[in-house]
Length: 539
Image (cartoon, rainbow, N blue to C red; front, side, top):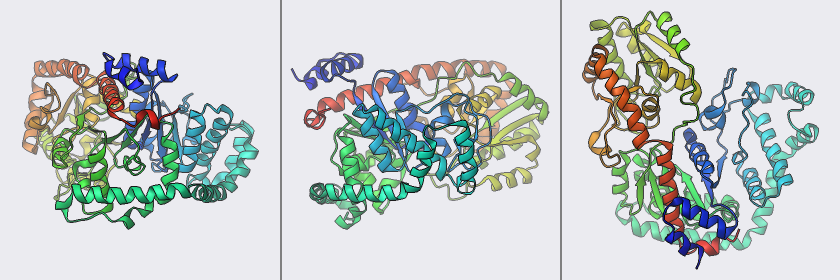
């Protein structure tokens, strides 16, 4: 009996994972590509704890909210550049990145992952150090002070063989160029495969989306030629590839199956745009072995794309630190400094304007107007904590000034996962978004902490995804925000009931155990249904 037959006959995900490991001599391997908002990191963390071997490849992307430190390091110190956070300048208090999360140039990351999967420990370790050195020295702040830091690094011996590493730094650009040329030379046979692939996908796209009138042309895909072999060779080491946002395109072009397209707001508009990215995103999700939808409103987009194999999955939430966060001192400080008896925490990105673009809109102005009326008419000792990030921070401050309630707001910088939990716990109410009708990770975090969330929730859409609508205060207009705040503030019984139901709902419908079950069952289904799996995965 083949491994696929045994997987088919397994009763649950625990059985099939055990059968897989027994027959293959290792757990199932999954490559997660992309890490916006740390979704890949959190999913991989959940799955690795369940016994899989997951790697996260975060290539050429360094934003602070796509770094493991943002989720799991209780760091102290100031990060000045959120696009290139300098983790070496702050105290991460003993946290070290897991070896299954790799960040840096694609070619370097691919080499490291291949060595890691070959169990070539020494060479993998050397490439891990090189990737660390690359990140350390190529942040903008290092361009000015790298010599000073090098001396400090030498004294502290942060990196073994630091002298050799420093020399290697100067050769990095040259190494990359040589590596690419060697890959291109050795990959000439694969060039024919790439050419045949893009011809095939051009035809498939034009057949599937003939009604769009924006044909996909072969020349459009030439930009992927230089990295094709890198991806093609890397994918051979994995049983499943899970591409986040638009990154499933690499598995598509390499004809790697099974692959899963994981959206987090991605298909709301992008697949319908007459751009190369739009066309490839539409094709990537259409040909995926499974598409995972994290935003309930995007079920509509999945139906518009005529996806035949998709499944809703909640956003992952870092549950590790819940229940261990000390928040009472923070609450006391907030109440005292704001002269308040009621606190709203609004961590959503500040982005609102009259156009209400669904890719960005948060409806912060709707909250501000309802909150201002609540302060003036009901509770002048109410206050709110806003996070100073997003494109319309200035406009939000101006609106607060115009409404005469700017003194009731405390602005704070974006908070890492642990600190955000402190503010959630220290607040009476958590305000999310007021336009899309769906939620990401803010509302689940609040509910998991036993705090009530105020947001606009399209209940009809969410009934397609959840057996039970989350117990939130539903408000779409500033009038509804005002009414919701009044009822919640005045009625302690309502508050107690909602807080109790919030935590219960999270455990029943959104917890990481549920996410783990969904992912493992999707993987089981994908491996079983992929006829090419056994031939494509010799490792």
